[in-house]
Image (cartoon, rainbow, N blue to C red; front, side, top):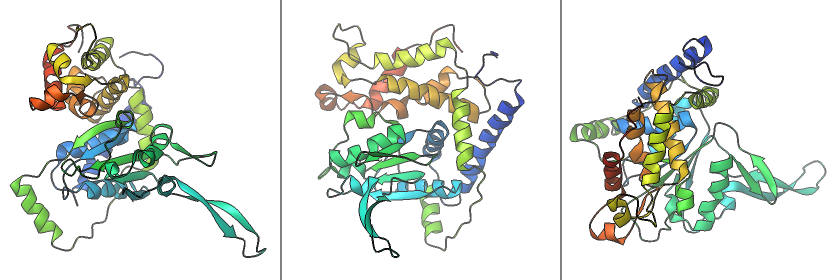
Length: 345
């Protein structure tokens, strides 16, 4: 392992201890989440990777799949402040960020403008059905997601760390919705797809939720722990070959005016993934490696996260739609087409 300053070193006791705490903390968090959440192993894994990296994620699923319950339970397990914003067509940007209100001093009777923080001033923000509000209001989250701050009336307010936005969308109810612009979609680390449970798991949900539920959670991981984990993740070394593989996957997803990309990309894709996709592939892969007790990133880490990182960033065209091809199929083809460099891990 390299001795380069700023990377995780096998001979650095503090790094090893923190990495072990991150791995055990993840296992304890899953154990706590299981007090309310049934199944959805892959979904939980991707939510936790978002937390460890410091990214925001978009949850896609039909109603009744416990999207809100999952994120609220995560905030309880972490003992972090949680706020839920129900996005509706009449929601205004100030309903998210907050606004100035007139307040009277009870002693002097003097009135002055005081800033009343909105629900975005929380550690974990759930933007429920984010595509049900107009783009102007959707954009109110952009600065918070990217910069962890909001600007109101020319004044900038820094948000408390850690800060995450988890947004939900219902993929089957499109009437009266406002599709998220690509620029905003690109700011979500993952698109986490939540499917229906198996019959046995659904039986367990009905059994547990029709009785009394009042779980108590232990807080094995705290907000400061998450911030330490995020810094540790960024220090995990990545070989040039693995970096090259992540970047090549992303670059190959983009149609080329010269036609030097694969035929299926030229035929089915209008716009491919941005460089932010490669960044999140690598960051997610670093976090995944640490949670599995490894201090290096493998090709398998990159491949494992290709779908949640790329599927909302690859915009298919009318040819793909007419042939019933999805972005998921494009990603499958990319993984078949782009071979890892032979010198990598």
